[in-house]
Image 1 (spheres, one colour):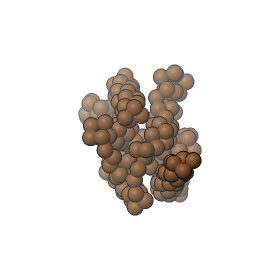
Image 2 (image 1 turned 45 degrees about the vertical axis):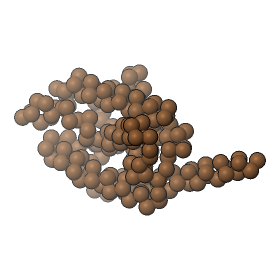
Image 3 (image 1 turned 90 degrees about the horizontal axis):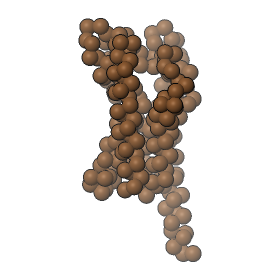
Image 4 (image 1 turned 90 degrees about the vertical axis):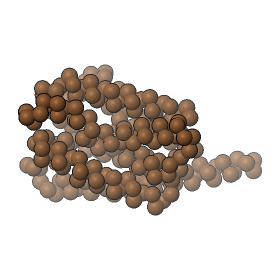
Length: 209
């Protein structure tokens, strides 16, 4: 439970920081002038936000019920890893230029959102349990997030969330990044199962030593 409590704490901390940042920059980010409170929804529009929300749900579920949900575990693992890998590979295409990236605050929460949580999940290998066919769920959830959250947000606010999704960016580039993220979700799902397999065999081997 120690690792779950740590993930829950830093994920909640990350959510609080996102809302504080959104509030502090509400005039700059509120591009839909007809609704001055629209900035409150900004921390729930990004793919990274989905990964943090899933981390809270996954760790909270284990803490409350002391049991593992395979589907929730698979979604949290795949999407957290995918958000982290995608961020560091396509950083230049997904970060807005108006963000101050040189502050300690940004660097700390940048690391939390893009690498720290998946790393802790690997350390918490005993609770990293899911079936191979569960990979379909993070795939569907990722597609749903794009269609039901990111695209409507762009249509309502004219804010594409990620610069590469802007209407002026070539379709080929959009498809290449989205395609990579889609395939990487599958890859990460298999990697997670491989880690689980190796760990279980090591435990079996240690019993005979």
